[in-house]
Image (cartoon, rainbow, N blue to C red; front, top):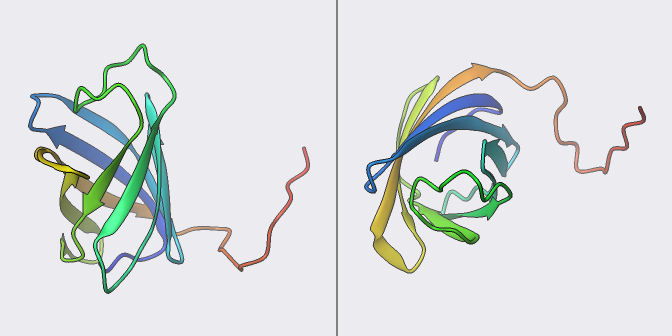
Length: 123
């Protein structure tokens, strides 16, 4: 998957007739993001499909896949992309009948890059 480091706006549409919007951040080989009901984390790989861990934190908002617990999405290593846009077809790990199409648009580069060293931010 070719993605430049930065912040992406995402729109996702499931085969359960539901949709949503969120943010995705790519920093090195790490990918994180979130929306109104879930947060997602994964590690990018050039050689394997990507497993995106989806953690539900707001159970009052229904999941676009009608899954009420945490789950994993499989992102194929081959995706349609150009410099600023990605199109992904992801399925739930263990259930290819549940899937979501994700459209990501690059918004801006990161100001703080992952240096491999832990960073502490003080308020």
